[in-house]
Amino acid sequence: MPALQPTELWKESGRYNAYSPELIRLTDRHQREFALGPTHEEVVTMLVKNEINSYRRLPVTLYQIQTKFRDERRPRSGLLRGREFLMKDAYSFDASWEGLDRSYRAMYDAYHRIFERCGLTFRAVEADAGSIGGEGGTHEFMALADIGEDTIAVCSHCGYAANVEKATSMEDRFKSSESEIPVYEKIHTPGVQTIEQLTQHLQIRAIDVMKTLI
Image (cartoon, rainbow, N blue to C red):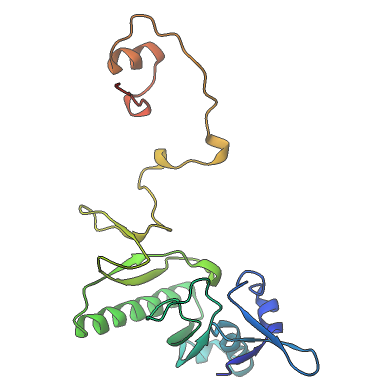
C-alpha cells in the first residue's frame, strides 16, 4: 500500500478534518496535496471498490504490515505515540451486517489466541472508535501493567471492561445530559431528620438523595 496518499480520498471519506492534526500533509511540485498514511481505510476501500463488483466475491479480508505516520502530540520512544511506527492492519468487507459480525468475531478470537501464545496478561475492553468511526462495538486489547497512559474500568461481577474514555454505567439513572441538569432551589423541611422522613416529605426515592454530614 502507498505510504503517500492523495488527500482527495480523505476528503471524500469525511475524515480529512476529523483526523487533524495527526494527519501529516505535504504538497508536490504541482501543489497537489498528499498525506503520509496514518492508516489505510481510504486506500483499501478504493481498491475494493474498483476490484470487487459482485457480492459473490465477499466476504474478503485484506491485511498488511506497514510503516504508518502520525503527528502525535506527545511522541515517545517506546511502542506507543511514535510519529513513525510499524502496524499490522486488516480490513474486512461483507455483504451483510451478520457477515460483518462474523468477521469481527473471527478477528477478535484470533487476537486472543495470539496474545495468549505470547504469554501476555491482557484484557479486551470496549473502546472509543475515535476518528475511525463506524457502528457496533469496538474493542482494544490492553496489556495490564502498573504504568502506562491508559486506564480501564472493570466490573468484578459481570466482567464488563472498558477504556475510561468509553466506560458507561449500566443504569440509565446515572446517565445525564445538559438538558437534564436540574435547577437547584432551597426547600424548607421542618422536622425532617432522616433520609426516610425526607423521601416521605418530598415524595422522592432515597437513591435520588445525597446526605452530607459535617
